[in-house]
Length: 269
Image (cartoon, rainbow, N blue to C red; front, side, top):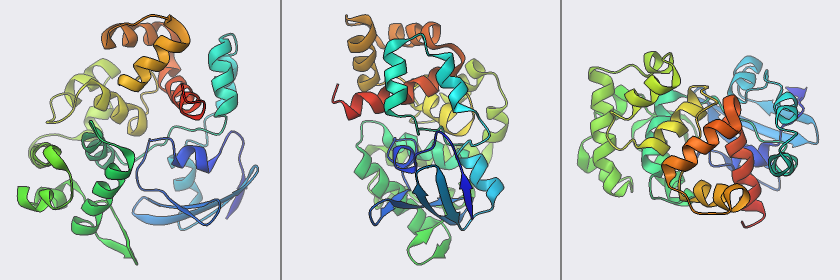
């Protein structure tokens, strides 16, 4: 299927650090897994061709019903963010499966993207259902909860294996991510922080990338440095950076963060 989409760049999205299962194929095409199905995406300017999923699934996953031009207009008086938005104008916030996002970002703590991708893929191949060839659906909580700690250690999770082990069992026994996602952002964050291996940054990533909490502003050492360098011109604590971002960027703070992160990475800030 082919559709015309504004403010969409599959390369910027797939390489943004929101998701760890997109693969670049050839010069510019990408292949990933959406809703347990293989999705192939090819883009030529504003024309996006995709196959493997329904149009509704594609639109929901890539947040295509949201007008990102309006968000860019919302921040037009901020010259730093305006430049960042021009640089990463094709970024969108993905609406991912909640459990996969939870586990992926537990694995992401103090880790690098190639290792995170390898670990997430290893979990899918070892515990998820095969879709086609070497593509596997990410396991459900019930499927992953059957894994022993030794099984998880074989997937390259490092010290995070025990967090995944504990969190899977907690979800199967007592917690519903769907119900947690319905809570206001502060209550949602408090519930996510109860899971093993989930700190403030990981909680905000889960809320932003799978629960549509766009005011969530994940802060790690990189974002801290970006805000200090571009805005504050002095060193602040992580808590102070979070408070500043909440006041500065408001209801779309998480989207602003993605623009700034992409801009800083592209310009080696």
